Image (cartoon, rainbow over all chains, first blue to last red; front, side, top):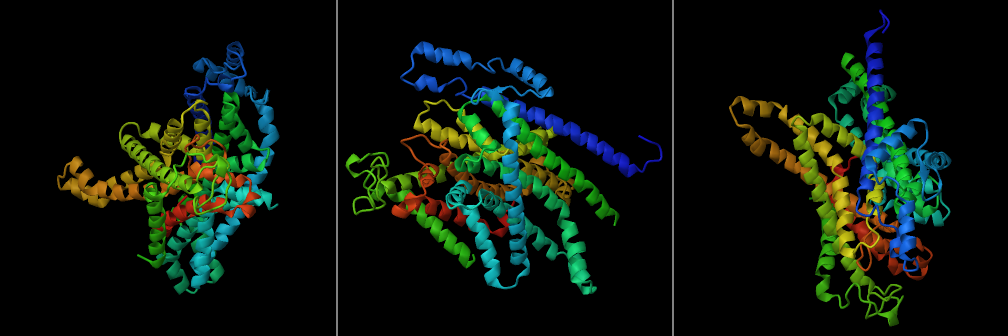
Amino acid sequence: MMPGRPPAHRGFAWRLAGAAVRLALIVVVGVMVCAALVRYSPGFESEEADIDARLTRETALAVHERSRTGEDFPAFVLDYFRRAVHGDLGVSRTFNSPVTDLLRDRISATAMLMVAGITLAWAAALMLACVAVFQPVMFFRCGAEVLAGISLAIPAPVIAIAFFLSGAPVSAALALAILPRVFGTIRELLEDVCRSPALVFARARGLSRAAVVVRYVALPIGPQLTALIGVSLVLAFGSAIPVEALCDVAGIGQLAWRAALGRDLPLLCGIAMAVTFLVALAHTSTELFHVPTSQAERSR
Amino acid sequence: MTRVRAVALSLLAGVLTVAFASPAFVPHPYDEQYRDHAGEPPSRKFLLGTDDLGRDRLSRLAFATRLSVTLACGAAALSVLLGLAAAGLSLSVLTKPVAVATTISLSLPWMFVFIVLRGMLPLNTSAAVSIGLTFAVMGVAGWALPGRVFAASVSQYRASEWVMHARACGMSERRIWTAHLWPHIRSIAWAQFRALVPAYILAEAGLGLLGLGVAEPATSLGNLIAELQHIGSIQTSPWILAPLVVLAIITTSIELLRGPAGVSA
């Protein structure tokens, strides 16, 4: 650390380093947990060949022999991380292709779907929450609640199938899956902030509407909104799996589904690593952003 | 109670009463096949028609509703209990490990974990085992969110002025727990339970649509909704929407009964 540098910078550097270490640990443990769940699940050693009456016992045994990946679990994990450091995540037995290539080929489709879905969901949630909180007309308030409620009651895959077959963008179905949670949280935050004495006082002081919105509404709820982005990411990926699987979108979600059906340990570990990394990165970033804001609030 | 909540409660009670009382008045078993009546529209004999194997849709819908609701409640109770146990552990020397385990669990999307765990069941699993394991997997995998809420609430309450006052008055820790903390935690546990039930019903529906739900001949709302993948048949047989309508009524009613404050990320 350079002498004379402001303490705030030193604090941020430490927090950044700590966050990086925590991120790496979460990814490692996440992959190990996923691998252990898969390896020690009761059906790991069962194969479709076992229940295929057309195959002889020898053929079934040969199929088993071919797919003995991960039988020695500690050795598998050690070998997996040793190769992962060099960018080799193994070979998928379902697709007979390197996991890294599969992830690279499909990540853009999922990323585009999730970005479009999250953007749409946030735009709709912000609009509906503003209507529900600030619009005194009962019709609009109830309309906003009902719209969010409907998307909460119908499973995302059903909406996705309907959208897909009617030619509407699938990302809108993903947005509908995220919308109710984001809407509910934003509405609660807005209701809380609108009831705060600081806002009432600011209005009484005669501050302009824009100043009130920026200083007393947007800034106080900013950290919670950034934390909500991380939650949206988890929700979006969770919903992307059935949406991609049913609507034939060649993304990570569809890959995860096919890997689970194919009991493909290397591929599932690769997906777990990618997903855990992205989600933990989002959470860590929001935490890093959150602390300085709180400090700034306290110092004001 | 507001009018909306009264309507929600009536609808929920109506659907559940029909579903749970149906064995008394539905004339056909849910798994019996009437091959001569396969794919029939609603009639006096089969009020919601029959599926492609000639099974009575109404009986199957009632069975699926009973199964999904009962087991979603069981799974939600399991998650809440595990969350409480995790919160209890976080008060001991295991604070850090529990926090790390919670963070990792929350970093893996539920649906991914459900699909991985459900997909790993043996291929020749019986219907009863698949039903139990599908919901047990949900119950076990969903511990992290209630666990984090409980841990935060317990530590907040333990640091509150009224608990400090009780401690200063010489009240034992056990008495503080039973008289002061548990009533607060109990209401949070109830709120978490009500939030998890519709989430698990919807998650099971998602798994059913992906072909990872309950094994035949048993059925769940997810398995029945899977028929909607052939969406073109809705125009010719709109009664196949019945499971979706029942699902929407159940989840919407539970959400409305929870009230606006219950909706959270």
